[in-house]
Each structure stands twice: as structure tokens, then as C-alpha cells.
Amino acid sequence: MELSSKAQKIYSAIDKETTKLGDLRKIAIEIKKDHALAMELWSTKEFLPRQLAILIMDKKLLNQEVIDQLDNDIQKHEFDERNNLMDWLMANQLSKDKKIISLIESWENSPSKLQRRVFWYYQARLRWMGNTNQTNTEELLDLIEKNLMKEEPEVQWAMNYTAGQIGKWQEQYRDRCILIGEETGLYKDEMVAKNCVPSYLPKFIPIEVAKLKK
Picture 1 (cartoon, rainbow, N blue to C red):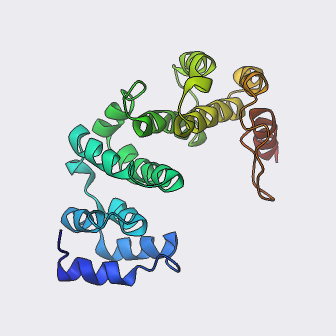
Picture 2: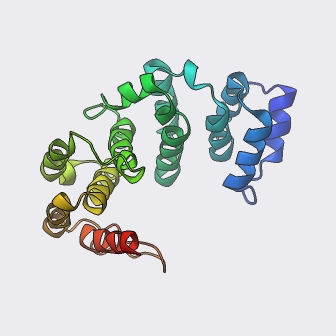
């Protein structure tokens, strides 16, 4: 796809070595919503232009078919980039529309590992945004206990993170969530940078709970 002059100008201004997320957000604020331009930037197949594209998409034009195509495109990126793009899409577009949220809630058994990741990450997001009065917590924990170690790494992280958020915010499930980490050993040997919270649930949950008490 040949870029329009407007898209080419924006594309040329993005430097993969120096452009930061904050820079992309500033550009997006100036552009506002422009779905056609978003699709042009998306067609470059490059990480940063696609991040910007997500910010200026029109969520009203996103449906399962369009999301599936975006998903297929994202799958072609390397591991960290594809997770970043799908999480970015969820946070900035998919979670902003009630109709799309209904789709997200149907993705638990999606054939797409990235859509399954979104299902779980959205459940975690509900809780860290303060919506802890959820009726499906027992069901989610049952599924995590049953399927966590069978899942793809992309989905495992989101399932584990959901258990972490449940354990952080809902005291009645805290011991059960810590036990999930102890029994699976998932992320037990993970090395994290200073001041970063480890993903291993027996460490993650106490650290996060301590923050709540400050």
C-alpha cells in the first residue's frame, strides 16, 4: 500500500531508535481520530507506526472480523512486540466500547492465543481499576488452577496476572492465589529489575498488598 503524503510525513517522523510512547501520544492528540490514516500506518507492518495507528483508530469500525485481521497481522511480530501491540489495542480501543467488551468476554476459548490473552488481561484490568465486585471470580480461579500450565506463554502471563490482581484486591481469595503460585512454580526463577515487582504470585501478592496498606 502506497502511503498518502500525510501518512508518509507522519511515518517519516517516527524514529524507531528515539521515538517514545509519549511522543506517539502527542502525535495522536494532534491527529485525533482518523481511521483511514490509522490503516495506512498499519500497512507499514512496523511496530511504532502500528502503535500510533492503534491510538487513532475509530473503535466504532472495529468488529470481530476486523479484530481478527489485526490479530493475524500482530501475530507476525516477535514475541514482545505482539504482546505489547495486543495489550495496547485492548487498553486504548477494545476496552472502550461495550459491544467490543462483549466480544472480549467471549474469547476465553478463542482459537487465537492473543484474544485469549486479552480475555484474561481484561479480567485483571477490571480488578485493578477497582471493580472487585465480580461474580465470576470463583470460575476464573477454577480455570486458572485447571489450565494455567497448559496455556501458551502469552496467555499464561495474563492468567497469572489475573490471579495476582484477585489476590491483591480480594482478601478472601488471597491464600488460594498464593497457593496457585506455590504449586505451579510459575515465574519463581524470574529475574526482575530493581524496583520491579516479580510475577511469582507468592512474592507479587504480598508486595502489592503492602502497597495498599501504605
